[in-house]
Length: 122
Picture (spheres, rainbow, N blue to C red):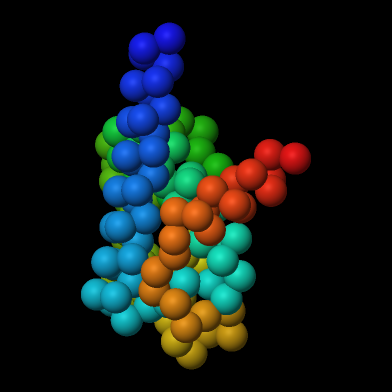
């Protein structure tokens, strides 16, 4: 039971870390979160899950034959190479202001993320 609590706690810490990273990176790159906050919440959750499972925030919006190999290659670790080089985020986590899907926020609350998680759980 202790390890389950520790694991849950670690997952929440990772989620908070990925939230903080996303907010900081959006502000640093002058990009914005999607106008639909559920997109932002789901992507941040996916990054946190990959960080816990794989040790790196591998892009959760792509299919991989071998996730461990992709982590080592680092191309799709967030922020991925297309984002760093051209501000192209496949996940729509970091959106340039000229994009129709860009909102006006560079932050999201843990409450919003948890609300989306709960709504998807059924």
